[in-house]
Length: 381
Image (cartoon, rainbow, N blue to C red; front, side, top):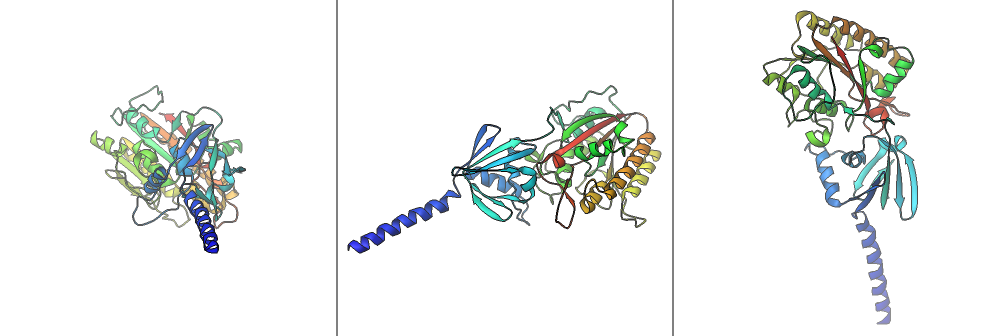
């Protein structure tokens, strides 16, 4: 009897240990963001997970960055991961692409699963106050055209409004850090003098389709519902619809395809007609033709080449520098050919960081300044 009692006690003790270990993965997680403490519960985890996996056809891995962005963090510098009393500090740029949220208090880094007690998040960013983001472009456009859209102010002060035309020059993948580098290298003679320059932030995740959703809606991914690539339509009002409702027209000049749906707009797909591996020259030609024929109230000209070359060869590569020079020359000519009473708004969707040991040498999609730092340039004519 004494022997069986000992066995039962041992089994009970073992079951308590196992239950404790298994249940710890579902415990609340303490997150400290620059000394502000947040308790992340299981319900909060499932709410974010449901937002990311809104598309039925695909389950996405859940980057930990969604938790940070949901709580107001635009750029992460570093994190402290605390397990019991052990603290491990990571530079976010080094792990951002390979860290996933697997349960409330479980994360995976480079394929290794960790159960953690607390996260300390240290913000990064420009190092100076930044007032603008990509979400301001739609509101600014409405203000410039004298139409109604949303209930917020863009924060820009322009000398001549309203105007007859607004032209968006969408420089895919050419973020703030890349612009600064190119300007220092002397390969941006036109864009560096194009107009008033406003450092700004993109939205998370900084990818073309999600940022385009923010561009069109004036709302970021936490508000417009487009949390992941692959969702191509808005379920909130769009600036295109607002322009259309005001009795005006919208023209979209794209590359080979559209990264997002543009209902109520005329769409011109340029393609790679001469087979040179780029759509930019054809986008440029179509923009020139549109300017000569007479553009509508809102026109978007989308250059994809800097992003394409950056992915393949890496940002700052020689191939990338050649493409940047080409786009700068095209932009210089197009700005000269703009019709009178036009506001040109020049912006990227996101930036790009170098990748080592991958099939591509450049990528984007993380809460690092290389990806999240952008700008808005305003040119009045």
